[in-house]
Each structure stands twice: as C-alpha cells, then as structure tokens.
Amino acid sequence: MLSRLPKLAKVAAAGAVIGVAAQETVHANADRIMPESYPFDHKGMFSAYDMGSVRRGHQVYVNVCATCHSMNLLAYRNLVDTCYTEDEVRVMCEDLEVEDGPDDEGEMFERPAKLSDHFIKPYRNEAEARFSNGGALPPDLSLMAKARPGGEDYIFALLTGYREEPAGVNVMNGMYYNPYFSGGQIGMPMPLQDGIMDYPDGTPATISQMAKDVSVYLTWSAEPAQDDRKLMGVKWLTALGAVTLSTLYYKRFRWNLLKSRRISYK
Image (cartoon, rainbow, N blue to C red; front, side):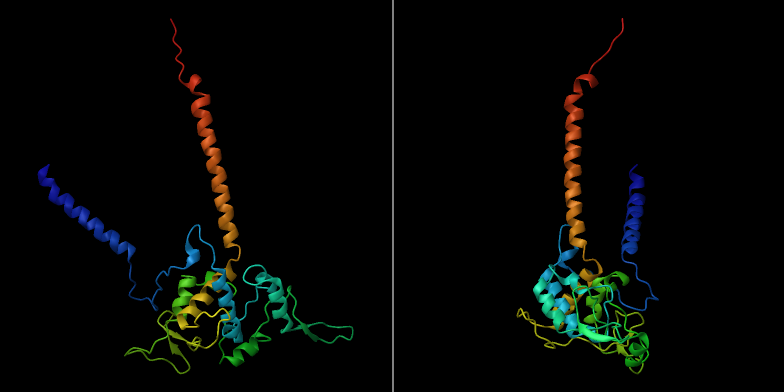
C-alpha cells in the first residue's frame, strides 16, 4: 500500500495541472484580448442597477454616441420612472423634432417628440449612414450588451482600450488600434476624452467614469426588466421555501404516528 502513494500523488498532481489548464485556456489564434470581469454593481444575484449611473450613461449616449449610433428599440417612455421623471422626459422631448405624416395634403411634417416615439435616428437611412462613415455602418446599440460576448465588460474594455499600436503591427489608414476589438483594428476613433462633457450631478467626467456609466446604461437598455425579474425570483424562492418547510413539518409531525407504527402478526 505504501508503494502506491507516490504514484497516486503523481496522478493527483497531473489532474490538478489539467484542471488549471482547462480553466485558463489560451488560444494562440485569438485575434483579440478577452476583457476581464469588472465588479459592476448589478452583477450580483440580489443586486440592482445603479440608476444614477444609468442616468449618467444616457447623458453620455446623447452627447457622444448618438451622433453615429441609433437605439431603435427604445422609446422615450422607457426613461420615465427609471432614470428620469416624466416631467424631465417631456421637457427633453420638447427639444426634439420628429418627422411625421403625411398630413391632409400628403406632405411630411416635423413635430415635437412624444413619449411614445422611439429614439431619433442619427441618419435617415443606411446609405446615408455608410456615406458619413466611410462605408462602415455604425451598429445599433439597443442590444449591444447582449450581442457581444462579455457584455458590459467588453464595452468598458473597448472604450478604455485604445492604445498605440505595438511594434510589428501595421494599422490600416483610417483605423485605430484596440486590442479588445476583433482583429485589433477598429474604424471608430476614441470617443471619450477627459472633460468632454459635464455631468449635471457634479460627477467628474473622466474616461473611466463615462465608460462605466455608458456600459451600465447599455446593459440596462438591453434588459430593462432585470431588476423586476430578480425581485420576482426572490418572491418565488421565498414562497417555495415556505411551502417546502410547511410540507416537511406536516410530513414529519402529522404522519409520524402512522409511519412509526409496527404491525405484527401472531
């Protein structure tokens, strides 16, 4: 038995090495760096969105991202009673013009936006969007946090990951080096700069702060009902726990006389 211990130790060590390698797999042909997991507040099982961050993220989107990227799946009413009050959203809509019509004469006309209107698109059609961006089509951001592996971690890493290209890497004309983007080259210039905007609540508008806020905002826009879903899950688990405990109590003490009886035959 003692002679087998060294062999067992070698097998255990080999299994541990294989387990570590399986958890930290590195692909030599990967064309980008995978983002690390950042401690966003809403990631916990019982955590909710930081609505202050969602509000600031919407302000970053309006001032920086909305010039190129649309959010076709969101309407202005989605902002009400979440990160803005209804009066704030109505004031916001008064400054926006939406094309509507046709009228009685068959002409299109401009009117102030309503709560039921979807976010205004930066371009009238795809052809205009491509013409304004050198042939590239800026993606819609409504579900970006769900469409990209890594979600908010990827968005934050991408926005803060612009670097000078390392030696041996040739970046094409009109492209920018970002190791978190597929291929390492992205057509979007670095969108965020320190102090590019001012937060109304006085939060310093640094690159990392704005990247964090817009990442939380895009995660919220992709799944606005996440907090309600988590709350409903807590309620259901609490109810199921209460039912389970009452069932165990009933089985243990109500039926203990019958389950502990012994029937013997002479």
